Amino acid sequence: MRKENSSFKTDFLSEAGTFMENRDYFAYVELDDRACWIVADGCDNDVEVRSAEMAVQCLLENFTHKPTMSKRKLESYLQEAQDWLRLESRRVRLKVSLIMVVTDYTRIVWAVAGNARLYHFRGGRLLQQSKDLSLAQAMADRESISSYKVDRHEERHNLLQYVGKPEGLEPFISKKTALNDGDVLLLVTPGMWESVDVPEMLDSLEDTEDPTALVDTLEEVLLSKQQPVIGNYTAAAIYVDKVYKEDKKKWSKWVKRIALVMIPVIIAAGFAIYYKSRTAARMAESLANMLEYEQTGDTYVEERNYAQALKSYSEARAEAKKLKDKVHIALYGVKYKKVDLIVAGDGFLKEGDYEKALTQYKKAKEETKNDGLYDQQELDQKISQIDEYVRIAAIVQEADLKAEGQDYSAAVLLYKQARKAALNVGFVEGEKEIKTKLDEAEAKIAELVKEQKLLKAENLEKRGDRSFAAGNYEAAIDAYTQAQAIYQEIAVLEPVLKLERSIGKAEDKLNPVPSPAAGGDAGTGDGGGAGNTGTGSGANSDAGGSSAGSGNASSSAGNNGGASGSGADASGAGGTANSTADAGSSAGSGAGTSGGAVAATPAATPTPTSVPSDLEATEQANTTG
Image 1 (cartoon, rainbow, N blue to C red):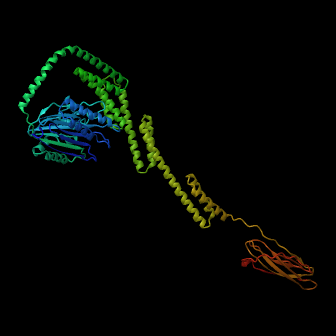
Image 2 (cartoon, rainbow, N blue to C red; image 1 turned 60 degrees about the vertical axis):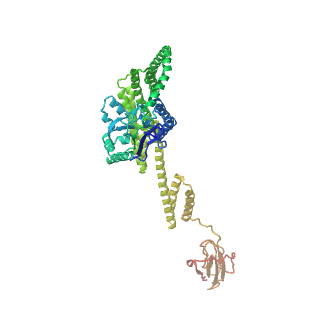
Image 3 (cartoon, rainbow, N blue to C red; image 1 turned 90 degrees about the horizontal axis):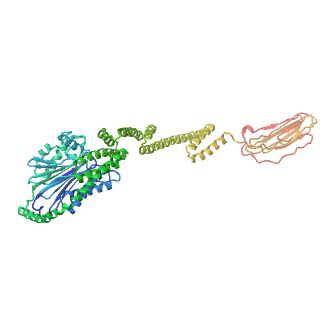
Protein backbone atom coordinates (compact mmCIF):
# COMPACT_ATOMS: atom_id res chain seq x y z
CA MET A 1 0.00 0.00 0.00
CA ARG A 2 1.08 3.57 -0.68
CA LYS A 3 1.34 4.75 2.91
CA GLU A 4 3.50 1.81 3.97
CA ASN A 5 5.86 2.39 1.05
CA SER A 6 6.36 6.11 1.67
CA SER A 7 7.44 8.30 4.58
CA PHE A 8 5.64 11.54 5.50
CA LYS A 9 6.31 13.15 8.91
CA THR A 10 3.99 15.84 10.31
CA ASP A 11 4.05 18.20 13.27
CA PHE A 12 2.36 21.50 14.06
CA LEU A 13 1.75 24.24 16.62
CA SER A 14 -1.23 26.54 17.07
CA GLU A 15 -1.36 29.40 19.58
CA ALA A 16 -3.71 32.26 20.48
CA GLY A 17 -0.99 34.94 20.42
CA THR A 18 -1.92 37.92 22.60
CA PHE A 19 -5.63 37.08 22.38
CA MET A 20 -7.70 35.15 24.92
CA GLU A 21 -9.03 32.62 22.42
CA ASN A 22 -7.43 30.70 19.54
CA ARG A 23 -9.82 30.48 16.59
CA ASP A 24 -7.32 28.68 14.31
CA TYR A 25 -7.64 24.93 13.78
CA PHE A 26 -5.47 22.21 12.22
CA ALA A 27 -6.20 18.55 11.56
CA TYR A 28 -5.05 15.84 9.17
CA VAL A 29 -5.66 12.23 8.30
CA GLU A 30 -3.33 9.66 6.65
CA LEU A 31 -5.13 6.78 4.95
CA ASP A 32 -3.70 3.85 3.03
CA ASP A 33 -3.85 5.52 -0.40
CA ARG A 34 -4.58 9.17 0.38
CA ALA A 35 -3.73 11.79 3.01
CA CYS A 36 -5.19 15.20 3.76
CA TRP A 37 -3.96 18.20 5.82
CA ILE A 38 -6.12 21.26 6.56
CA VAL A 39 -5.23 24.54 8.30
CA ALA A 40 -8.13 26.93 8.96
CA ASP A 41 -8.50 30.43 10.41
CA GLY A 42 -11.86 31.48 11.91
CA CYS A 43 -12.45 35.06 10.77
CA ASP A 44 -15.69 35.71 12.68
CA ASN A 45 -16.26 36.75 16.31
CA ASP A 46 -18.89 34.23 17.39
CA VAL A 47 -18.11 33.30 21.00
CA GLU A 48 -20.16 30.10 20.99
CA VAL A 49 -19.44 28.48 17.61
CA ARG A 50 -15.93 27.51 16.49
CA SER A 51 -16.31 27.95 12.78
CA ALA A 52 -12.79 26.82 11.80
CA GLU A 53 -13.16 23.55 13.65
CA MET A 54 -16.60 22.98 12.10
CA ALA A 55 -15.31 23.49 8.57
CA VAL A 56 -12.25 21.23 9.04
CA GLN A 57 -14.29 18.43 10.59
CA CYS A 58 -16.82 18.55 7.76
CA LEU A 59 -14.07 18.33 5.12
CA LEU A 60 -12.20 15.51 6.86
CA GLU A 61 -15.38 13.48 7.36
CA ASN A 62 -16.19 13.64 3.65
CA PHE A 63 -12.58 12.96 2.66
CA THR A 64 -12.29 9.98 5.02
CA HIS A 65 -15.52 8.54 3.65
CA LYS A 66 -14.43 8.99 0.02
CA PRO A 67 -10.72 9.82 -0.34
CA THR A 68 -10.08 11.62 -3.63
CA MET A 69 -7.88 14.03 -5.52
CA SER A 70 -10.64 14.88 -7.98
CA LYS A 71 -11.13 18.61 -8.39
CA ARG A 72 -14.88 18.19 -8.73
CA LYS A 73 -15.15 16.07 -5.58
CA LEU A 74 -12.95 18.40 -3.52
CA GLU A 75 -15.05 21.33 -4.67
CA SER A 76 -18.22 19.50 -3.56
CA TYR A 77 -16.66 18.84 -0.14
CA LEU A 78 -15.88 22.54 0.24
CA GLN A 79 -19.40 23.41 -0.87
CA GLU A 80 -20.85 21.18 1.85
CA ALA A 81 -18.72 22.95 4.48
CA GLN A 82 -19.90 26.25 2.99
CA ASP A 83 -23.56 25.23 3.30
CA TRP A 84 -23.07 24.12 6.90
CA LEU A 85 -21.50 27.41 7.98
CA ARG A 86 -24.22 29.42 6.27
CA LEU A 87 -26.86 27.32 8.01
CA GLU A 88 -25.24 27.92 11.40
CA SER A 89 -24.86 31.68 10.83
CA ARG A 90 -27.70 32.60 13.18
CA ARG A 91 -26.10 35.23 15.43
CA VAL A 92 -23.26 36.40 13.17
CA ARG A 93 -21.95 35.42 9.77
CA LEU A 94 -19.48 32.54 10.18
CA LYS A 95 -16.35 32.94 8.07
CA VAL A 96 -13.40 30.61 7.60
CA SER A 97 -10.19 30.98 5.60
CA LEU A 98 -8.44 27.66 4.90
CA ILE A 99 -5.84 25.75 2.91
CA MET A 100 -6.42 22.05 2.18
CA VAL A 101 -3.65 19.78 0.82
CA VAL A 102 -4.38 16.28 -0.50
CA THR A 103 -1.82 13.69 -1.64
CA ASP A 104 -1.67 10.17 -2.98
CA TYR A 105 1.89 10.00 -1.55
CA THR A 106 3.21 10.77 -5.04
CA ARG A 107 1.52 14.05 -6.01
CA ILE A 108 -0.39 16.82 -4.25
CA VAL A 109 -3.28 19.14 -5.02
CA TRP A 110 -4.40 22.00 -2.80
CA ALA A 111 -7.59 24.00 -2.39
CA VAL A 112 -7.64 27.60 -1.14
CA ALA A 113 -10.56 29.64 0.23
CA GLY A 114 -9.26 32.83 1.83
CA ASN A 115 -5.67 33.67 2.77
CA ALA A 116 -4.31 30.61 4.60
CA ARG A 117 -1.19 29.54 2.69
CA LEU A 118 0.88 26.60 1.46
CA TYR A 119 4.66 26.92 0.94
CA HIS A 120 6.32 24.08 -1.03
CA PHE A 121 10.09 23.91 -0.47
CA ARG A 122 12.52 21.78 -2.46
CA GLY A 123 16.29 21.69 -2.27
CA GLY A 124 16.50 24.62 0.13
CA ARG A 125 14.44 27.00 -2.01
CA LEU A 126 10.80 27.91 -2.44
CA LEU A 127 9.37 25.82 -5.29
CA GLN A 128 5.84 27.24 -5.26
CA GLN A 129 3.38 29.09 -3.03
CA SER A 130 -0.40 29.20 -2.98
CA LYS A 131 -2.13 32.49 -3.85
CA ASP A 132 -4.54 34.25 -1.50
CA LEU A 133 -8.09 34.93 -2.59
CA SER A 134 -7.94 38.50 -1.28
CA LEU A 135 -8.22 41.98 -2.71
CA ALA A 136 -4.52 42.59 -2.12
CA GLN A 137 -3.61 39.50 -4.20
CA ALA A 138 -6.08 40.56 -6.91
CA MET A 139 -4.40 43.98 -7.04
CA ALA A 140 -1.03 42.26 -7.38
CA ASP A 141 -2.38 40.05 -10.18
CA ARG A 142 -3.54 43.21 -12.00
CA GLU A 143 -0.09 44.66 -11.30
CA SER A 144 -1.64 47.52 -9.33
CA ILE A 145 0.85 46.74 -6.57
CA SER A 146 4.03 44.68 -6.41
CA SER A 147 3.64 41.05 -5.41
CA TYR A 148 6.04 41.44 -2.49
CA LYS A 149 3.71 44.11 -0.98
CA VAL A 150 0.81 41.69 -0.60
CA ASP A 151 1.99 40.45 2.81
CA ARG A 152 1.84 43.97 4.30
CA HIS A 153 -0.93 45.58 2.24
CA GLU A 154 -3.95 46.96 4.10
CA GLU A 155 -6.30 44.88 1.92
CA ARG A 156 -4.62 41.54 2.66
CA HIS A 157 -7.53 40.56 4.93
CA ASN A 158 -10.24 41.75 2.53
CA LEU A 159 -11.17 38.26 1.34
CA LEU A 160 -12.92 37.79 -1.98
CA GLN A 161 -13.61 34.12 -1.26
CA TYR A 162 -14.02 32.34 2.06
CA VAL A 163 -16.05 29.44 3.45
CA GLY A 164 -19.36 30.87 4.66
CA LYS A 165 -19.66 33.62 2.04
CA PRO A 166 -23.38 34.43 1.63
CA GLU A 167 -23.50 34.63 -2.14
CA GLY A 168 -21.59 31.42 -2.87
CA LEU A 169 -18.09 29.98 -2.71
CA GLU A 170 -15.64 29.76 -5.62
CA PRO A 171 -12.44 28.23 -4.21
CA PHE A 172 -9.18 27.78 -6.09
CA ILE A 173 -8.12 24.14 -6.64
CA SER A 174 -4.67 23.53 -8.10
CA LYS A 175 -3.48 21.05 -10.65
CA LYS A 176 -1.58 17.96 -9.49
CA THR A 177 2.04 18.60 -8.59
CA ALA A 178 4.60 15.78 -8.30
CA LEU A 179 6.46 15.34 -5.03
CA ASN A 180 10.16 14.47 -4.65
CA ASP A 181 12.01 12.92 -1.76
CA GLY A 182 13.12 15.64 0.64
CA ASP A 183 10.29 18.08 -0.15
CA VAL A 184 8.85 20.14 2.72
CA LEU A 185 5.27 21.40 2.83
CA LEU A 186 4.42 24.25 5.22
CA LEU A 187 0.79 25.23 5.90
CA VAL A 188 0.28 28.50 7.83
CA THR A 189 -2.43 30.97 8.83
CA PRO A 190 -2.01 34.77 8.44
CA GLY A 191 -0.80 35.12 12.02
CA MET A 192 2.38 33.29 10.95
CA TRP A 193 3.07 34.51 7.40
CA GLU A 194 2.43 38.16 8.32
CA SER A 195 5.30 38.07 10.83
CA VAL A 196 7.69 35.53 9.27
CA ASP A 197 8.64 36.18 5.65
CA VAL A 198 9.99 33.68 3.10
CA PRO A 199 13.74 34.36 3.66
CA GLU A 200 13.25 33.72 7.38
CA MET A 201 11.38 30.51 6.57
CA LEU A 202 14.30 29.38 4.36
CA ASP A 203 16.79 30.17 7.12
CA SER A 204 14.71 28.19 9.63
CA LEU A 205 14.43 25.30 7.18
CA GLU A 206 18.20 25.22 6.70
CA ASP A 207 18.79 24.87 10.45
CA THR A 208 16.25 22.09 11.06
CA GLU A 209 15.85 18.47 10.03
CA ASP A 210 12.35 17.52 11.18
CA PRO A 211 8.91 19.14 11.32
CA THR A 212 8.96 19.65 15.10
CA ALA A 213 12.16 21.67 14.99
CA LEU A 214 10.90 23.69 12.01
CA VAL A 215 7.63 24.86 13.60
CA ASP A 216 9.41 25.61 16.90
CA THR A 217 12.03 27.70 15.07
CA LEU A 218 9.36 29.61 13.16
CA GLU A 219 7.62 30.41 16.43
CA GLU A 220 10.88 31.68 17.93
CA VAL A 221 11.37 33.98 14.94
CA LEU A 222 7.82 35.31 15.30
CA LEU A 223 8.10 35.96 19.04
CA SER A 224 11.58 37.49 18.76
CA LYS A 225 10.06 40.49 16.95
CA GLN A 226 8.24 41.44 20.17
CA GLN A 227 5.17 42.84 18.48
CA PRO A 228 2.62 44.50 20.83
CA VAL A 229 -0.22 42.55 19.25
CA ILE A 230 0.16 38.98 17.97
CA GLY A 231 -2.80 37.31 16.29
CA ASN A 232 -3.70 33.62 16.38
CA TYR A 233 -0.99 31.72 14.53
CA THR A 234 -0.73 28.14 13.25
CA ALA A 235 2.03 26.34 11.36
CA ALA A 236 1.95 22.71 10.18
CA ALA A 237 5.07 21.17 8.59
CA ILE A 238 5.11 17.97 6.50
CA TYR A 239 8.51 16.45 5.69
CA VAL A 240 8.37 14.18 2.63
CA ASP A 241 11.26 11.83 3.35
CA LYS A 242 10.15 9.31 0.75
CA VAL A 243 7.42 9.38 -1.89
CA TYR A 244 5.59 6.36 -3.21
CA LYS A 245 7.21 4.99 -6.40
CA GLU A 246 4.86 4.16 -9.24
CA ASP A 247 5.32 0.84 -11.14
CA LYS A 248 5.88 1.76 -14.82
CA LYS A 249 4.77 -1.68 -15.98
CA LYS A 250 1.59 -1.19 -14.07
CA TRP A 251 1.08 2.11 -15.83
CA SER A 252 1.48 0.48 -19.26
CA LYS A 253 -1.10 -2.05 -18.22
CA TRP A 254 -3.46 0.74 -17.31
CA VAL A 255 -2.81 2.45 -20.64
CA LYS A 256 -3.90 -0.68 -22.47
CA ARG A 257 -7.00 -0.91 -20.37
CA ILE A 258 -7.80 2.71 -21.06
CA ALA A 259 -7.30 2.16 -24.77
CA LEU A 260 -9.77 -0.72 -24.70
CA VAL A 261 -12.22 1.48 -22.93
CA MET A 262 -11.71 4.32 -25.41
CA ILE A 263 -12.64 2.22 -28.43
CA PRO A 264 -16.34 2.24 -27.62
CA VAL A 265 -15.96 5.90 -26.68
CA ILE A 266 -14.64 6.70 -30.11
CA ILE A 267 -17.52 4.81 -31.63
CA ALA A 268 -19.91 6.72 -29.46
CA ALA A 269 -18.35 9.97 -30.66
CA GLY A 270 -19.93 9.38 -34.00
CA PHE A 271 -23.31 9.55 -32.41
CA ALA A 272 -22.35 12.80 -30.74
CA ILE A 273 -22.62 14.60 -34.04
CA TYR A 274 -26.27 13.82 -34.01
CA TYR A 275 -26.70 15.75 -30.82
CA LYS A 276 -24.63 18.73 -31.97
CA SER A 277 -27.65 20.66 -33.05
CA ARG A 278 -29.27 20.08 -29.70
CA THR A 279 -26.14 21.37 -27.99
CA ALA A 280 -26.31 24.51 -30.10
CA ALA A 281 -29.91 24.97 -28.99
CA ARG A 282 -28.90 24.69 -25.36
CA MET A 283 -26.14 27.25 -25.91
CA ALA A 284 -28.63 29.62 -27.46
CA GLU A 285 -30.89 29.14 -24.46
CA SER A 286 -28.00 29.84 -22.09
CA LEU A 287 -27.16 33.00 -24.05
CA ALA A 288 -30.75 34.21 -23.78
CA ASN A 289 -30.81 33.43 -20.09
CA MET A 290 -27.51 35.22 -19.56
CA LEU A 291 -28.75 38.43 -21.19
CA GLU A 292 -32.05 38.24 -19.32
CA TYR A 293 -30.33 37.82 -15.97
CA GLU A 294 -28.09 40.78 -16.75
CA GLN A 295 -31.06 42.99 -17.63
CA THR A 296 -32.89 41.87 -14.48
CA GLY A 297 -29.83 42.67 -12.38
CA ASP A 298 -29.58 46.15 -13.89
CA THR A 299 -33.25 46.75 -13.11
CA TYR A 300 -32.77 45.69 -9.50
CA VAL A 301 -29.81 48.08 -9.20
CA GLU A 302 -31.95 50.97 -10.45
CA GLU A 303 -34.59 49.98 -7.88
CA ARG A 304 -31.89 49.84 -5.15
CA ASN A 305 -32.68 46.17 -4.51
CA TYR A 306 -29.04 45.17 -4.31
CA ALA A 307 -29.54 41.72 -2.80
CA GLN A 308 -31.65 40.59 -5.76
CA ALA A 309 -29.28 42.30 -8.19
CA LEU A 310 -26.41 40.31 -6.69
CA LYS A 311 -28.32 37.08 -7.28
CA SER A 312 -29.16 38.00 -10.89
CA TYR A 313 -25.56 38.87 -11.75
CA SER A 314 -24.41 35.60 -10.19
CA GLU A 315 -26.85 33.68 -12.39
CA ALA A 316 -25.75 35.63 -15.46
CA ARG A 317 -22.14 34.80 -14.75
CA ALA A 318 -23.04 31.12 -14.30
CA GLU A 319 -24.65 31.08 -17.76
CA ALA A 320 -21.57 32.80 -19.21
CA LYS A 321 -19.42 30.03 -17.72
CA LYS A 322 -21.59 27.43 -19.42
CA LEU A 323 -20.92 29.23 -22.69
CA LYS A 324 -17.23 29.62 -21.82
CA ASP A 325 -17.64 33.29 -22.70
CA LYS A 326 -14.65 34.85 -20.99
CA VAL A 327 -15.64 38.39 -21.94
CA HIS A 328 -19.05 38.16 -20.28
CA ILE A 329 -17.65 36.23 -17.34
CA ALA A 330 -15.33 39.17 -16.65
CA LEU A 331 -18.11 41.71 -17.28
CA TYR A 332 -20.53 40.10 -14.88
CA GLY A 333 -17.72 39.65 -12.40
CA VAL A 334 -17.25 43.43 -12.33
CA LYS A 335 -21.00 44.03 -11.99
CA TYR A 336 -21.19 41.44 -9.26
CA LYS A 337 -18.32 43.03 -7.34
CA LYS A 338 -19.91 46.48 -7.33
CA VAL A 339 -23.18 45.19 -5.94
CA ASP A 340 -21.39 42.88 -3.52
CA LEU A 341 -19.60 45.85 -1.94
CA ILE A 342 -22.92 47.56 -1.20
CA VAL A 343 -24.55 44.36 0.07
CA ALA A 344 -21.54 43.66 2.29
CA GLY A 345 -21.70 47.24 3.62
CA ASP A 346 -25.40 46.79 4.42
CA GLY A 347 -24.58 43.53 6.22
CA PHE A 348 -21.85 45.11 8.33
CA LEU A 349 -24.13 48.04 9.12
CA LYS A 350 -26.84 45.66 10.34
CA GLU A 351 -24.31 43.85 12.51
CA GLY A 352 -23.17 47.17 14.02
CA ASP A 353 -19.67 46.97 12.56
CA TYR A 354 -19.64 50.57 11.34
CA GLU A 355 -15.95 50.70 10.48
CA LYS A 356 -16.17 47.79 8.03
CA ALA A 357 -19.47 49.09 6.62
CA LEU A 358 -17.89 52.47 5.99
CA THR A 359 -14.95 50.80 4.23
CA GLN A 360 -17.29 48.82 1.95
CA TYR A 361 -19.40 51.86 1.06
CA LYS A 362 -16.34 53.96 0.23
CA LYS A 363 -15.03 51.18 -2.02
CA ALA A 364 -18.44 50.90 -3.66
CA LYS A 365 -18.47 54.64 -4.33
CA GLU A 366 -15.03 54.42 -5.90
CA GLU A 367 -15.97 51.41 -8.06
CA THR A 368 -19.29 52.90 -9.25
CA LYS A 369 -18.30 56.54 -9.79
CA ASN A 370 -18.48 56.18 -13.59
CA ASP A 371 -21.45 53.80 -13.65
CA GLY A 372 -24.73 55.51 -14.45
CA LEU A 373 -26.78 52.75 -12.82
CA TYR A 374 -25.67 53.77 -9.34
CA ASP A 375 -26.79 56.83 -7.40
CA GLN A 376 -23.68 58.43 -5.92
CA GLN A 377 -25.86 60.63 -3.74
CA GLU A 378 -27.31 57.53 -2.10
CA LEU A 379 -23.85 56.20 -1.31
CA ASP A 380 -22.86 59.62 0.08
CA GLN A 381 -25.95 59.48 2.25
CA LYS A 382 -25.01 56.01 3.53
CA ILE A 383 -21.49 57.21 4.32
CA SER A 384 -22.83 60.31 6.12
CA GLN A 385 -25.30 58.13 8.00
CA ILE A 386 -22.52 55.87 9.26
CA ASP A 387 -20.46 58.91 10.26
CA GLU A 388 -23.44 60.02 12.35
CA TYR A 389 -23.79 56.51 13.81
CA VAL A 390 -20.13 56.61 14.81
CA ARG A 391 -20.64 60.02 16.44
CA ILE A 392 -23.67 58.72 18.35
CA ALA A 393 -21.71 55.66 19.45
CA ALA A 394 -18.97 57.94 20.79
CA ILE A 395 -21.52 59.95 22.81
CA VAL A 396 -23.05 56.74 24.19
CA GLN A 397 -19.61 55.47 25.12
CA GLU A 398 -18.87 58.70 27.00
CA ALA A 399 -22.25 58.41 28.76
CA ASP A 400 -21.47 54.82 29.72
CA LEU A 401 -18.23 55.96 31.34
CA LYS A 402 -20.12 58.64 33.29
CA ALA A 403 -22.65 56.07 34.46
CA GLU A 404 -19.88 53.68 35.53
CA GLY A 405 -18.40 56.54 37.57
CA GLN A 406 -21.88 57.12 39.14
CA ASP A 407 -22.15 60.56 37.57
CA TYR A 408 -25.69 59.79 36.55
CA SER A 409 -26.78 63.39 35.91
CA ALA A 410 -24.07 63.87 33.30
CA ALA A 411 -24.85 60.43 31.85
CA VAL A 412 -28.55 61.32 31.46
CA LEU A 413 -27.70 64.51 29.55
CA LEU A 414 -25.40 62.58 27.18
CA TYR A 415 -27.93 59.76 26.68
CA LYS A 416 -30.62 62.31 25.82
CA GLN A 417 -28.28 63.98 23.35
CA ALA A 418 -27.45 60.64 21.72
CA ARG A 419 -31.09 59.57 21.61
CA LYS A 420 -32.16 62.80 19.93
CA ALA A 421 -29.43 62.38 17.32
CA ALA A 422 -30.48 58.74 16.74
CA LEU A 423 -34.10 59.78 16.19
CA ASN A 424 -33.03 62.49 13.76
CA VAL A 425 -31.17 60.02 11.53
CA GLY A 426 -33.68 57.18 11.88
CA PHE A 427 -31.29 54.99 13.89
CA VAL A 428 -34.11 52.83 15.31
CA GLU A 429 -32.10 50.01 16.90
CA GLY A 430 -29.63 52.44 18.40
CA GLU A 431 -32.43 54.61 19.79
CA LYS A 432 -33.98 51.63 21.58
CA GLU A 433 -30.68 50.70 23.18
CA ILE A 434 -30.00 54.31 24.22
CA LYS A 435 -33.49 54.67 25.72
CA THR A 436 -32.91 51.57 27.85
CA LYS A 437 -29.67 53.03 29.17
CA LEU A 438 -31.35 56.41 29.74
CA ASP A 439 -34.14 54.80 31.78
CA GLU A 440 -31.57 52.95 33.89
CA ALA A 441 -29.63 56.15 34.61
CA GLU A 442 -32.79 58.08 35.53
CA ALA A 443 -33.85 55.23 37.81
CA LYS A 444 -30.47 55.44 39.55
CA ILE A 445 -30.94 59.19 40.07
CA ALA A 446 -34.44 58.65 41.49
CA GLU A 447 -33.10 55.99 43.81
CA LEU A 448 -30.34 58.30 45.08
CA VAL A 449 -32.80 61.18 45.62
CA LYS A 450 -35.09 58.88 47.58
CA GLU A 451 -32.20 57.70 49.73
CA GLN A 452 -31.20 61.32 50.43
CA LYS A 453 -34.76 62.28 51.41
CA LEU A 454 -35.06 59.17 53.59
CA LEU A 455 -31.84 60.10 55.39
CA LYS A 456 -33.10 63.68 55.89
CA ALA A 457 -36.42 62.44 57.30
CA GLU A 458 -34.64 60.10 59.71
CA ASN A 459 -32.43 62.96 60.94
CA LEU A 460 -35.48 65.20 61.47
CA GLU A 461 -37.20 62.41 63.42
CA LYS A 462 -34.15 62.03 65.64
CA ARG A 463 -34.05 65.82 66.17
CA GLY A 464 -37.73 65.74 67.23
CA ASP A 465 -36.97 62.97 69.74
CA ARG A 466 -34.16 65.04 71.26
CA SER A 467 -36.36 68.17 71.51
CA PHE A 468 -39.16 66.15 73.15
CA ALA A 469 -36.77 64.73 75.71
CA ALA A 470 -35.54 68.26 76.49
CA GLY A 471 -39.13 69.55 76.99
CA ASN A 472 -38.99 71.76 73.86
CA TYR A 473 -42.31 70.51 72.53
CA GLU A 474 -42.81 73.18 69.87
CA ALA A 475 -39.45 72.29 68.22
CA ALA A 476 -40.33 68.59 68.52
CA ILE A 477 -43.66 69.11 66.74
CA ASP A 478 -41.97 71.11 63.95
CA ALA A 479 -39.30 68.43 63.37
CA TYR A 480 -41.86 65.58 63.48
CA THR A 481 -44.12 67.39 60.97
CA GLN A 482 -41.28 67.96 58.47
CA ALA A 483 -40.14 64.34 58.75
CA GLN A 484 -43.73 63.12 58.30
CA ALA A 485 -44.13 65.19 55.09
CA ILE A 486 -40.93 63.74 53.61
CA TYR A 487 -41.95 60.14 54.44
CA GLN A 488 -45.29 60.73 52.71
CA GLU A 489 -43.55 62.22 49.66
CA ILE A 490 -41.31 59.17 49.16
CA ALA A 491 -44.17 56.75 50.00
CA VAL A 492 -42.56 55.28 53.13
CA LEU A 493 -45.77 54.95 55.12
CA GLU A 494 -44.83 53.02 58.24
CA PRO A 495 -42.99 55.95 59.94
CA VAL A 496 -45.89 58.31 59.07
CA LEU A 497 -48.24 56.67 61.59
CA LYS A 498 -45.52 56.54 64.23
CA LEU A 499 -44.83 60.26 63.85
CA GLU A 500 -48.58 61.01 64.08
CA ARG A 501 -48.55 59.53 67.60
CA SER A 502 -45.35 61.40 68.50
CA ILE A 503 -46.89 64.72 67.37
CA GLY A 504 -50.01 64.00 69.51
CA LYS A 505 -47.91 63.37 72.63
CA ALA A 506 -45.94 66.60 72.12
CA GLU A 507 -49.17 68.62 71.69
CA ASP A 508 -50.59 67.13 74.92
CA LYS A 509 -47.50 68.20 76.79
CA LEU A 510 -47.60 71.67 75.25
CA ASN A 511 -51.34 72.29 75.91
CA PRO A 512 -52.58 70.27 78.98
CA VAL A 513 -56.41 70.12 79.53
CA PRO A 514 -57.61 71.53 83.02
CA SER A 515 -59.94 69.36 85.22
CA PRO A 516 -63.46 70.77 86.26
CA ALA A 517 -64.23 71.90 89.98
CA ALA A 518 -65.48 69.16 92.40
CA GLY A 519 -67.18 71.12 95.23
CA GLY A 520 -68.34 74.54 96.66
CA ASP A 521 -68.34 76.79 99.73
CA ALA A 522 -70.99 76.52 102.44
CA GLY A 523 -71.91 78.25 105.65
CA THR A 524 -71.94 81.88 106.74
CA GLY A 525 -72.70 83.44 110.09
CA ASP A 526 -73.46 86.86 111.47
CA GLY A 527 -72.97 88.04 115.04
CA GLY A 528 -75.79 89.84 116.73
CA GLY A 529 -73.74 91.36 119.46
CA ALA A 530 -71.48 94.24 119.43
CA GLY A 531 -68.64 92.14 118.14
CA ASN A 532 -67.28 88.62 117.89
CA THR A 533 -64.05 87.05 117.23
CA GLY A 534 -63.69 83.80 115.45
CA THR A 535 -60.87 81.39 114.94
CA GLY A 536 -60.63 78.77 112.25
CA SER A 537 -58.40 76.06 110.97
CA GLY A 538 -58.50 74.37 107.60
CA ALA A 539 -56.91 71.67 105.51
CA ASN A 540 -56.42 71.54 101.70
CA SER A 541 -55.77 68.66 99.30
CA ASP A 542 -54.76 68.73 95.55
CA ALA A 543 -55.86 66.74 92.55
CA GLY A 544 -59.50 66.61 93.03
CA GLY A 545 -59.38 66.26 96.84
CA SER A 546 -61.24 68.37 99.41
CA SER A 547 -60.51 70.89 102.08
CA ALA A 548 -62.18 71.02 105.48
CA GLY A 549 -62.20 73.73 108.07
CA SER A 550 -63.64 74.30 111.48
CA GLY A 551 -64.14 77.60 113.23
CA ASN A 552 -65.08 78.87 116.65
CA ALA A 553 -66.01 82.27 117.83
CA SER A 554 -66.13 83.78 121.25
CA SER A 555 -67.90 86.90 122.27
CA SER A 556 -66.57 89.48 124.62
CA ALA A 557 -66.93 93.05 125.62
CA GLY A 558 -70.57 93.34 126.40
CA ASN A 559 -73.64 91.58 125.30
CA ASN A 560 -72.23 89.87 122.37
CA GLY A 561 -73.15 86.27 122.02
CA GLY A 562 -70.78 83.50 121.05
CA ALA A 563 -70.56 81.98 117.69
CA SER A 564 -69.06 78.83 116.49
CA GLY A 565 -69.03 77.39 113.07
CA SER A 566 -67.69 74.50 111.15
CA GLY A 567 -67.74 73.90 107.45
CA ALA A 568 -66.18 72.13 104.52
CA ASP A 569 -65.07 73.31 101.07
CA ALA A 570 -64.22 71.15 98.14
CA SER A 571 -62.28 72.95 95.41
CA GLY A 572 -60.69 70.34 93.20
CA ALA A 573 -57.08 70.34 92.41
CA GLY A 574 -55.16 72.73 94.52
CA GLY A 575 -58.31 74.12 96.37
CA THR A 576 -58.11 75.99 99.73
CA ALA A 577 -60.55 76.67 102.59
CA ASN A 578 -60.46 79.43 105.17
CA SER A 579 -62.83 81.29 107.42
CA THR A 580 -62.80 84.81 108.79
CA ALA A 581 -64.98 86.73 111.22
CA ASP A 582 -64.97 90.47 111.45
CA ALA A 583 -67.10 92.95 113.38
CA GLY A 584 -69.95 90.83 114.37
CA SER A 585 -70.01 88.70 111.25
CA SER A 586 -68.26 85.57 110.19
CA ALA A 587 -67.82 84.15 106.66
CA GLY A 588 -65.47 81.75 104.87
CA SER A 589 -64.90 78.25 104.13
CA GLY A 590 -65.94 77.38 107.61
CA ALA A 591 -69.30 78.30 109.26
CA GLY A 592 -69.81 81.00 111.94
CA THR A 593 -72.83 81.58 114.27
CA SER A 594 -73.69 84.53 116.52
CA GLY A 595 -76.58 85.04 118.89
CA GLY A 596 -77.40 81.37 118.83
CA ALA A 597 -77.54 81.05 115.11
CA VAL A 598 -76.16 77.80 113.75
CA ALA A 599 -74.96 77.22 110.13
CA ALA A 600 -75.39 73.99 108.27
CA THR A 601 -72.30 71.73 107.95
CA PRO A 602 -71.63 69.97 104.59
CA ALA A 603 -70.68 66.32 104.33
CA ALA A 604 -67.13 65.38 105.15
CA THR A 605 -64.59 64.94 102.31
CA PRO A 606 -61.70 62.39 102.03
CA THR A 607 -58.45 63.28 103.65
CA PRO A 608 -55.99 64.66 101.00
CA THR A 609 -52.91 62.63 100.26
CA SER A 610 -50.63 65.64 100.18
CA VAL A 611 -50.95 69.24 101.21
CA PRO A 612 -48.43 71.83 100.04
CA SER A 613 -46.80 73.63 102.94
CA ASP A 614 -47.56 77.04 101.50
CA LEU A 615 -51.28 76.29 101.71
CA GLU A 616 -51.34 75.20 105.37
CA ALA A 617 -52.77 77.99 107.45
CA THR A 618 -54.56 78.60 110.67
CA GLU A 619 -57.11 81.37 110.66
CA GLN A 620 -58.28 83.24 113.75
CA ALA A 621 -60.96 85.84 113.98
CA ASN A 622 -61.78 87.91 117.03
CA THR A 623 -65.02 89.69 117.40
CA THR A 624 -65.14 92.68 119.71
CA GLY A 625 -68.43 94.03 121.04
